[in-house]
Image (cartoon, rainbow, N blue to C red; front, top):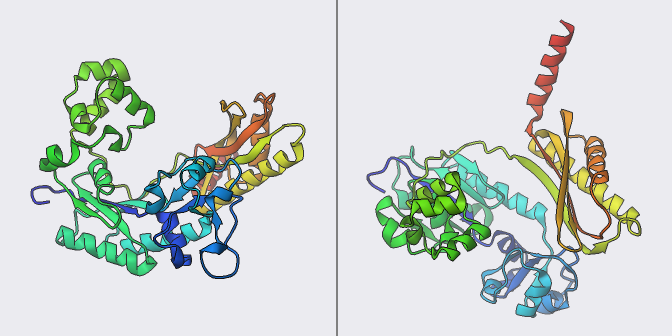
Length: 382
């Protein structure tokens, strides 16, 4: 990394949820394992693989949360319907997700990294950016030290990409999984980055990828050589400009120690489509539970929010959202439930529901909201 002042690392835990489960059930190592589906059976008492549910026995509309590398080799990936996954890998082991355990191990690995490199940007339960620029240490040795610290704290492996910026570091961390370490500089762009598919760039989603394919642009290198005018005509000025910058590996974003979410949400996909009238009591219970869990998330993370919204997916897969902005920020479950109910009354309910979700945005720290209220009272009554 000589010749550049910035050293940014992206650390990504390897098949995180599945790896946590393998700590609990080490006899499953080397076998295709799929995590997902609320109705998936927990292992029964006993020994051997016969005590685990097989994917072929699953019936429902759940989706794959994650899978081991052995299951991925059979074509089973995150967000795939479990029934489709069962057709591809009927003998794979199916385990229910345990998010309390995943959050516990997430805290462990982040604490281990922070003890060595404290300038961290939290990007989710299983990934972080780390600014290594100010640390006086050889880059490969420092990266191995981080990997060892994570393994010592959790028993899990991670992959690390190190580059001059976040965009390239994110790409690199995925190149040599599992347990990989990839270091690149801008001089490596043509050999290491440009041959990769454009979808490897974080920010190029499925729809943009599909539109680029129609233009004959399949690799990052082809995107770097594309006519800017053609991109602008297809994607608009702002996104086209970003595509060009990304293809050339340019990214000036800082590693932010605090990464505030724009919104927090809770949603659930039903095992069967629910009728608003016939399943009224069940829907009401689920709705209230989502609001309560959302309030718990806010309290745990130290936020309150002003805009409450709902998300509905109908039996025909159409999605509808509604929201309402409150006069004051809240984290109270009752207030959230009342506001979400108001949104629900404004949504069409003539079709059965497949998914129900509740979200809150316009977030601020709970302490900030309290201080704002105090300041307002002071102005009103002074």
